[in-house]
Length: 173
Image (cartoon, rainbow, N blue to C red):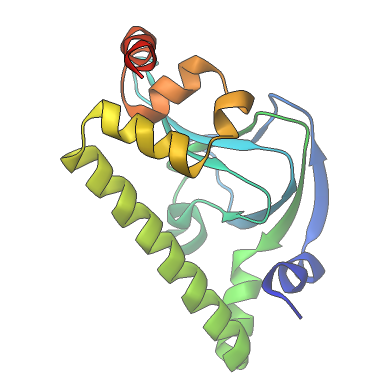
């Protein structure tokens, strides 16, 4: 059984319309979600209302607030649908218990956590070591479909720049 099929069999399928939140920063939600179809945005909101886009979630991806799932604290970020979306909701506790009982499930979880760690490491490197223009170019190369599906404001928030700065970068390309 493929990883996504395994996760689909464990969870509850749910449909969310465009712009609806799966969860919000500060909520208690100790579930994991696999996106079957649609597009999601994970983002942080500062106390003064400024938004920073953490990531865009494409079909087949697994997401959840590790702080909420593992530490049983509130979600550290919000997750919102950018398109009508179909997700599978999975109990993180149930998945952890299965991993303790089954080496195949444990291996699946280990691989998933390693992939997440590498993704976070790459994003951290890009923010600390690359210019906004270089980050934009990588986005164009890696995820060109996002440029058609996501607003310019969200792209700018993802790159950590203003929409005006993004417009200038695009004009130089």
